[in-house]
Image 1 (tube, one colour):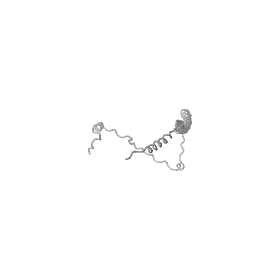
Image 2 (cartoon, helix red, strand yellow):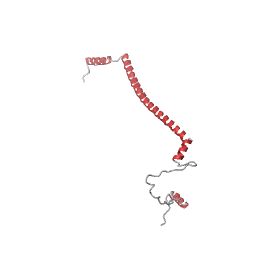
Image 3 (cartoon, helix red, strand yellow):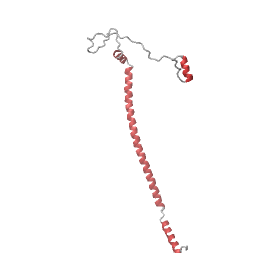
Length: 154
């Protein structure tokens, strides 16, 4: 191929010079850096403000819950004081405990319509076992050694 002529080389060098002539000045670079930093700081502060608003909302909810719990605690303390008092013990003994003082008569009202009915027959109570019978010692040892119940001999 033919070598490039000096005119073509001069044109290429001129293009490069024009392109290189468009370099940014140090002031333009400094302004771009400042704008970029400003944008980053603005975004950071915006995020912090949003986070602070969320934290303030959570803080308000916690304060409201604390106030509710303090009111509940106060009512429970008052109830505890009442339950420990003699007045409550006497109320419970007379109302729920069906207890009476000397000289008093306990009256338990009957339902309507039961006054004409003859007294019911006496009900005999049958004893029953509420707990399982305890196994024999040899059954316990068998279960420990063989990890299962003893064989059934029927």
